[in-house]
Image (cartoon, rainbow, N blue to C red; front, side, top):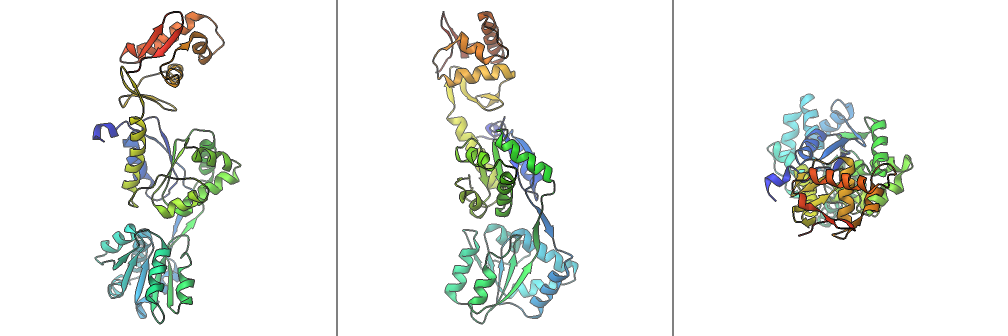
Length: 372
């Protein structure tokens, strides 16, 4: 896929970003590919950098160093170190972490560990707490002290399971999920999705995906949204398998990149639309793709009026067969039955495309798209 094709491959696509954190970065990357981006966070991240409990728990970890530390999220680990720094504990905490076995839940957690100059001893490639729990229980944790840095939705049962197996567990909550920053925008987003105004929805956390789907149900459009997602009329994109789970639990199969990074998520979504463009109609004027709000010819947006776009959609759907004048008139606004109105509308469509051969007149029958 060439760099030039990336610029327009998502033209005409309205993408909803449901994340609060790094939403600007995600929106900018999608906009560069031609997408129109809407933003409606399903949840907010509530930091606890000034939380007395987090400082007290950090002091306890420093005073009684753990044998192993489970890092569940990159943002959580960074927030923990920043909170320790604000409390004057950063050097002590990093020294303790350097002497412990560091277990990361996926590449983001590993990256955050590396950013502090430390090294992850083991990484759960599935990005699930279940994989971490399976490893530790197989090895045996009885008598070990294990610190678990929670993510916003909790510890996924890690604390309870490890304690039941005989571990001394220290839990650290670094941030929590809070309510959506703009409930009205969230409600508007699910209504727009149900009405067919959204082409793709992007999720970057499992709690966020769950909260957005819950908002759809609360607003009375849950089944409509799920139907559009299941039928492929609206694309769901999730940053990783953990984020994808709330969708899969509801029968929706999202697009998921091989690596759980925002950049990989954008590339995977762009590749999805690039593949759709490859499957577009081949005409004498080039490869034609008619989307919900625009039409692209060889990757370039055609300057069509809404009426011309609907006419082109009608011709494309016919697959090269003849479209009659009455069919053209039925597509036009108003209730005119004058054949001349159909001819004028077709002439305007021809004027808007770079190759007038694209729309052919079939004498005494109507019009058709000229396929190659």
